[in-house]
Image (cartoon, rainbow, N blue to C red; front, side, top):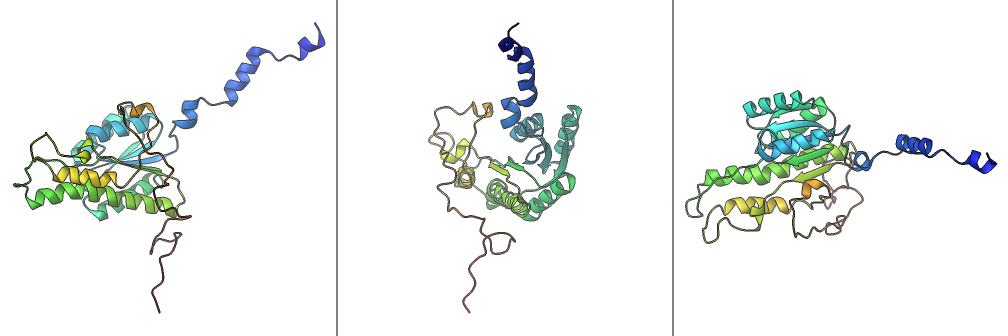
Length: 246
């Protein structure tokens, strides 16, 4: 055997070395192992599916829901799959509850890395018939709840220097009314349009397959006022607010 042949690496041995050293792309880009997530409205519907997908990727998930019975059922079902989940009864209309949810997550797991706001209210009233209490319930759940739960999670992330992800779930309703020619549910699209104004979405996994023919503005935050640090008058570690004139 020639000297060159002896020095040539064995293809099978080289392949095994590469397999041991290089992780599959799904492990590099899609794994959520070691991450803690919060999903509001996670006990049923879309939120339930979000919890399931995050758990599949390895995340530990706190399910937040106003319905305790649904939350306990979801916990049983997810634990039966071997997922690491916890339940926190939460009314997102309450700012106090939003902050308590983040604190619960910190005590149960760690500072949240991910927040997905799926909690939502919906009802069917014409513009002329809508009662104030229904308007308040829908707007407070869909918009106020997303806003202040996002604030609570963001403050924890800033404090602990966690580069987290906050995803506000809206609805196609934000683009307009319900059935054509019927003045129904105008308050619901108003709430969902407000949610859209909070975030830029960047979905680049098969979970976005249902999006067709859409233009997603991915600009790294160029449309926002860029800062080296977040701005706050009260939160430590942020850019300080302007001092009052003496």
